[in-house]
Image (cartoon, rainbow, N blue to C red; front, side, top):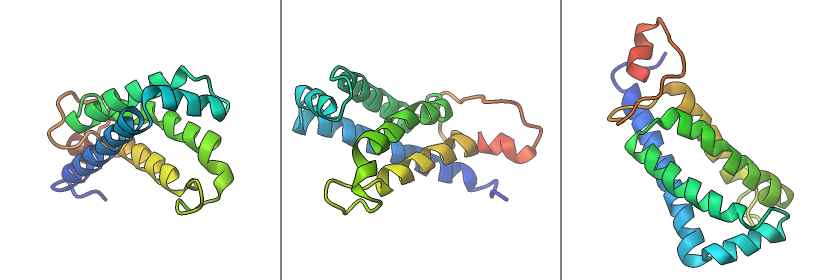
Length: 145
């Protein structure tokens, strides 16, 4: 059972943490690797280079939306393909542990699970625009959204 008093703050913490990670990764692509360098890397792993610009934008705007709580449950689901794509194209062949050479799939898989959990438990406290993913008759559900 989710604690009706504190569950919304757990969802808030999860939302802000995942949003911050997306902003950090967008910043890494923009300021360290550069957008052109990121596009070149995408091409080297078999993805269309221009997809890098879409991923950077999604990480920036998705990260901000998560932090601010703007349709955050839906944004969590929308961000999943980025992480699943990173696992499939970059990390899967490098083993499980993220400390492996080139980074295994441990971290992006955990991050994907965190996004799924967030989508399931609700937007959390202080969300600016709440996501309605279906009606529930449970009193606890009123606090989880």
